[in-house]
Image 1 (cartoon, rainbow, N blue to C red):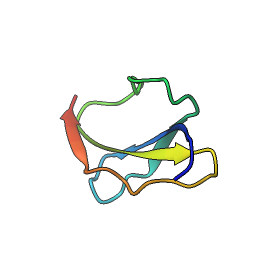
Image 2: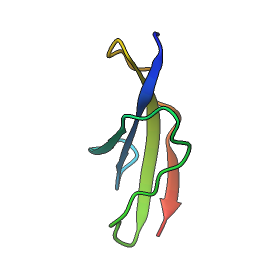
Image 3: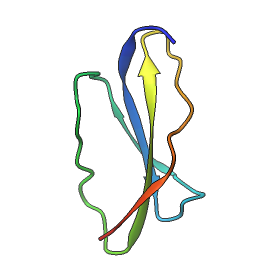
Image 4: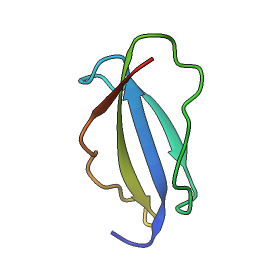
Length: 66
């Protein structure tokens, strides 16, 4: 991979269907809050994006109950 450009957070209500995403085009960002989630279980994973438009594999999926 080239120089780090940012991150992509993917998430959804099912660990096998992370169908929503947020792209953060600032590699210096170390935290992000996903707003507007309804009650229930949510699943999240993240990947790194570089300046050559390459991306890393997704991280392990983690969950959060709201």
